[in-house]
Length: 488
Image (cartoon, rainbow, N blue to C red):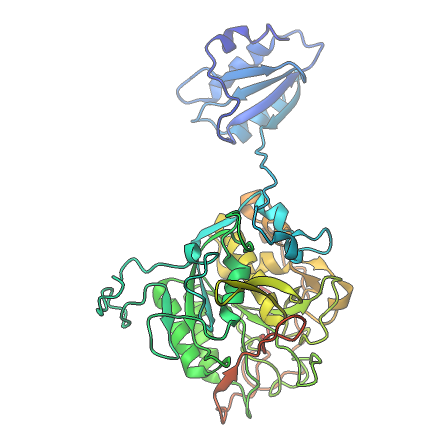
């Protein structure tokens, strides 16, 4: 067999070490074939508009010919034709393989959701495919971030239209010197964290990976906009958050992480709900935390009473993903809110090691710590499937969760986040999930009264205040909410 392709291989360019290509075929002839491989493979030129001769190499170990299909031919069409040839035993596309990448960050071993054997969210498998989300602009609406943290600065969004420190609104967006984001609470261009919460959220999503220090975000290389709305105690108001959402729309953000929430005084805010609707109209996916229960530290059912549920996680807008917190045993965290109609999935949210103020690192616990993993997962999937809509990304994230007993009946999916499965089922990996109908159950809206689908009574709230509550170690981190999500 090695001599059969000699005429082809004399002029062949070496293919080993070349960039991965879908234009190469692996072909093995039948041992008893009366025809030479050269004759069969030379027929490939018939598929080329230019009539160019295919180039190839011989792999003696498997008696297989590696054939470079002419660029103006379709490899799938050629492969199917060769499969019809009775002289051919095997034909397959030369598929791409990738190293199972693992970052070298100093404290990676403390990040159990990323490296624990089980349960984990499929990070290491995902990283073998993608760990760069720079083409997906992410905004964290929170308490800002530590702008000088060495594990974060490289992944901070940079407003190219703004000249820092000149006191001029160079890009005409209504904000002066807003280079990395904006502090909407203090009306300041520097969204410096003085609470710690936003810095921890940032680290989970996008601490610089593989830089030999600190921790790794689920996305190693990112563009993350820091928008400060929470004060030094973790409190703010709805109007501030709405202004931050408007800024996101102006700047072309694709994903917003909102690890905070409020319980309405009388009724949920229509204004915040409308802002999230407008974000959806602009193609933005909003990821929210489900809330950290009541003052006794026990999670509550966000379905039970719309006027006592956590918001924005319990709004019915379909561009929201609401996230409950799970622990390292795949149990629903005791403090985590839940709700079959109002919480979509679970993600790790107990003892999450992340970045902290003052160039430091701390453990982070709460549904606030769970939402960022869903945010980064959505960004990774979107980064390699940039033409998809937020509804597509949401569906990929929700319908590829790992089933977890503790989440059955407590969340729409009954599962915990698995970013590797989401990627594997995406179009970029040849997945067909988006071609079929959704297997997810439709949420039961019978207990929801008033408002739009599954909504709540929408009278204006008597107070628009909301807060983020944070704790270290195993203390509940922040109070969040998730809106009644419809299956995408």
